[in-house]
Image (cartoon, rainbow, N blue to C red; front, side, top):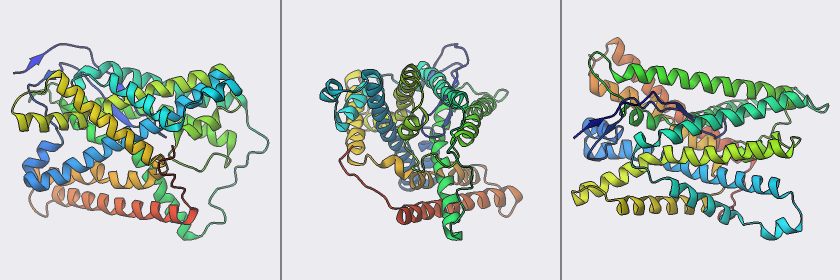
Length: 399
């Protein structure tokens, strides 16, 4: 049974991590189904069979969604600590009441899971809207305040690649591509979002989705390019080289800002992490509920849904505490997630459309898919090489 309810066109959701991720959340005529449907999993099961389809689809979707939630826990918790230090103002009384890293992680996870009780993507349009507004807000605050403070006298604009060997330059470029790939993650959610749109032969949902994606990336560009230009203009090669950790960049950019400006920026980031957590965790929740429904042959009750989400929250918390350095592996994670964007769609199109072998469409998609896999492999190798040459501090269970 399907019910349609008219609502206004939704907004986009921007991820707070490093550069940003585009997830367009359009909610015209949202659809409510009697069962959970993973729009990335089912095509893979139909095309590749039950065994290979699960391996091909479930692992990257769960890995990307779950990994993103873990990174959001780490980033949000560290930003909460920065906000506490800013508001408290330092001193012995603040230090006496200061929580440990694991306790900050637990506070963030508990609040995020309490908020994550909505049943499906259709019901979190408000979270998506708040995520978009807060992301645009704190990125704008950072680059505007950077321009207003002026350029430090000690800043240098000498190219950072000077003095490096050819191998170091190549691996640095590929490592940067991996970081960008992770920053624009969220493609595992595109089919889920498009599934909430009405579709017919005259008005296919792909057209609305395409418009939403264009608007989303336009807004992201308006946030990212001014920040990159302002940051390099003001600080040059003094910008922190430790990538992947948003809290480090926030602390660096706001060290000369007023207490009020710091507090507002940190609060926007915290709210964004909470709201983005709801969006990225939804595919995991849906797959858990799909498993339960298939096994029990009945719908999930409210208590079962709450229990499943508490289980995921606890698992994500444990991973965040065990691997608090996870954001530093942005290049490796982004490289491993790249096939979900560049390779799988091409191979799925060949399987669905079945173009004639050796035809232009067949060759184009096969070539792009293989190129995506090759690029993913090169990025992972370059990221590992960079970590090996620069050194890597793995602080297990020490958040």
